[in-house]
Length: 286
Image (cartoon, rainbow, N blue to C red; front, side, top):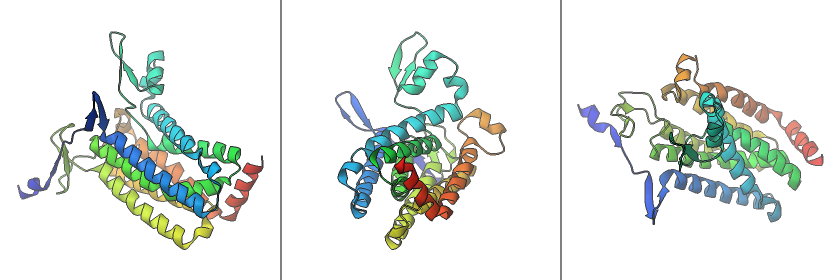
């Protein structure tokens, strides 16, 4: 009975405040704060590395748009392809933040479902395009993103916590959360595990950057970021509930299966060293 009293009953309002009829949601605010902190840190890194301001200015839009599109398409294609590819209307729902009702009308829903793996893929593509067009060493951009990304990821997972989504499995650990919007069972707060992990990784990576700034441009920092984040994601998935029914029949869930190749890419970036730097120069010369 004493243990039950330690469970955290979690039922926050999804809206922070209203401006007229428009509600500002915690999830959107967490995304905004995470992106703002990441952008401010990236601006500082560009300044430290003496990269001209005009080359930094377009980066935010490249990253913001690519992460949003990649994360949305990643969720729809990795987790719910049977739904989103089943009709023209559902394809529209995949691209636009709306849901079609049975009577043919539609309502605004926001993007309900974003996958971090898809966001990473979108960001990688965008960075190659950005670096080529702005004549910046692509591995310098990747490493700077590796230094900044964990702080943004921390706030995104806090947004998931405020939305009571990406919940963990039922458990009896004393720090379990009862997500009242879901059910009355105590569950692992998987979002919080990830948020804490990513915050710790941010401080580790930033400390290494301050000690070894010469490694920027070698792929080391982006490799370290990918390796740490998705290794943590792989193991935390064991205490998270599956997102879609088809995952119940898999030896590993979709999040784990998608994490494995990203971890391999991260390790390759870390050990690539000077080869990565030369490759970046060749990409920019094209």
